[in-house]
Length: 120
Image (cartoon, one colour):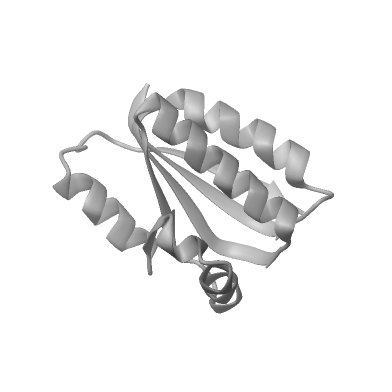
């Protein structure tokens, strides 16, 4: 198990991709020991189903004692998180580098497990 896992999400997070995205994120969660970072820089679209997947993963990370960080959300994703007030529920970093640096500052110095998840 890695101390932290980075999952790069690419494409649309919507009703069509939600079930597969949820399954892949659960697998990434099983591989992560302390921190799960979701790199949102490649997300082109997100609807309510995509947000529901994020909220579900946040709940599961809390139950398992794993820290969840969102990294590099696009302007559109940042706006969506803000208008739904979910920006208050997640730790969001402007860049993947800052999310990783924050992880290192919290004591997770082991090499990351990086998973690239296309949600086209």
